[in-house]
Structures are given as C-alpha cells and as structure tokens.
Length: 78
Image (tube, rainbow, N blue to C red):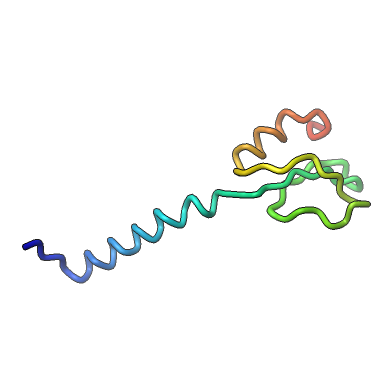
C-alpha cells in the first residue's frame, strides 16, 4: 500500500488546484477597444460601455489571440 505523508498531500492538492485554475485564468473574453480620447488601443476583460469614448475593435477568446490581433491592427500602431 502506498503511504503518502501529510505534507505531500498538501503539495499535491496545491498543484492540482493550480493546474486546473491556470487555463481558466487565461480564457477570455478579451476585448480590444480604441480609446478616442487618447487615440490608443486598449485591451480589457469587460466589454466597453462608454461607446462615445471607446470603439470596439474585436472580441477574442484568449489574451494571446487579442495581443496578436492588436499588433496587426493599423489603428493600434498609432
């Protein structure tokens, strides 16, 4: 029979919780918006509510996808 010591149980539990939570933190949606006042693009995890200040540029599932898209947007190169 395999004997697991209490400290190893704790470490194992922390690793399992961290491994399961990491993908959830990286998931979106992520929004790319153009700020009309600063003339720059910004990324947010919430959709813009102030449509006079922000123009929606796109919605992406991951932060990596959003950053890649923002790098290719001519309006964001500014």
